[in-house]
Structures are given as C-alpha cells and as structure tokens.
Image (cartoon, rainbow, N blue to C red; front, side, top):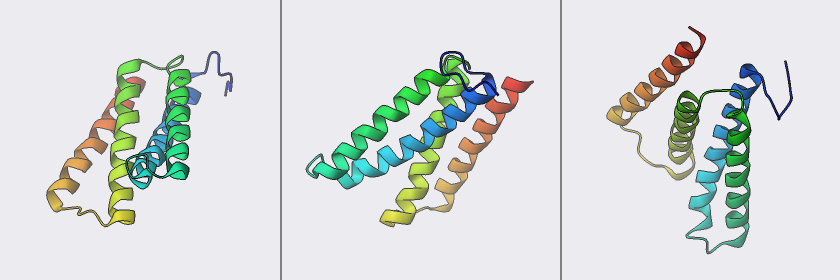
Length: 117
C-alpha cells in the first residue's frame, strides 16, 4: 500500500476518509461538551479534531472522487454522532430513526460498491 500523503492509493485514501469520519464524530461530540464554546478544554479539543478531520479529508481527495468520499465521510459522521448521542447523552433512538440510519448505511455501502464496480 502506498502510504504517501502526496498521492495516496485509492485504498489508502479510503482509509483516510474513514479516519476523517471518525474525527468528525469526536468533533461533534466535543461540540456538545463545549457548551456553546463556554468550556475551554472541550472547545480546544473540538477545534483540533475538526481541523484534523478536514485535513485528512483533503488528503484523501487526492486519491478518491469527491462525491462518494464526501457521502461516506458525512455518513460516518452522521451515524457515529447519532450512536454516540444515544450512548453518551441518552438521546432517543426510535424505530423510525433506526430505519433511516440503516438507509444511510445502505447508501454508504452502495457508494463503496459503485466505486469498485
């Protein structure tokens, strides 16, 4: 695998998209903890994770197409944040929400599959 950040292979670029999505989840959870940027620690951490997420995504886009990469990145962030909000903050996960989150997963898998087809 080519680990070069200047010209990542598609496989490495997709790994960067996933890593960026995971940073996006942490960023979103920390935004809640920052309480409107009134808490310096969570605020600084949120800014840091947000910047890392954007940087990783920008590097990944050197090796994959924007449309599918953005959809996967946004899907990871959306699903991960919803799961963490349910787990950490007790937000409700209704059957209807679960159904629509499952549709997001189907979309992500479909986009990945369409890239390799």
